Image 1 (spheres, rainbow, N blue to C red):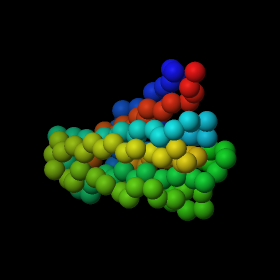
Image 2: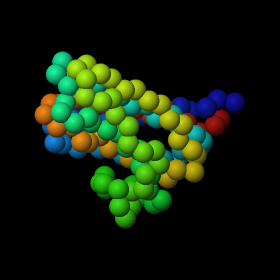
Image 3: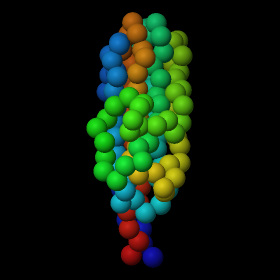
Length: 129
């Protein structure tokens, strides 16, 4: 039996500028089992005044909703975490996403004073042959 596995990019490595929010979404309705989400936040040589945090949210929708804050569509799956404000500090996490999740969003937000680098990727499998 062979599995068809896919690497997916939710947020390619990019700067989340001070006061901004970066979001990435993915439709998991066709995924056949659990997926693995990884993400990373890295402060620059001068740390932000307030840390950037990452929050993982899901939507109980059969079609992918527009990226947005927690509310009508998006509900928190994993609460916000961040690396703090120290210069060059970094936080990397991986979470197993259950097969029942229909739509997923990651949100990076909160940093003030300085930009930070953020990224998020996922591994999934979509078929068995």
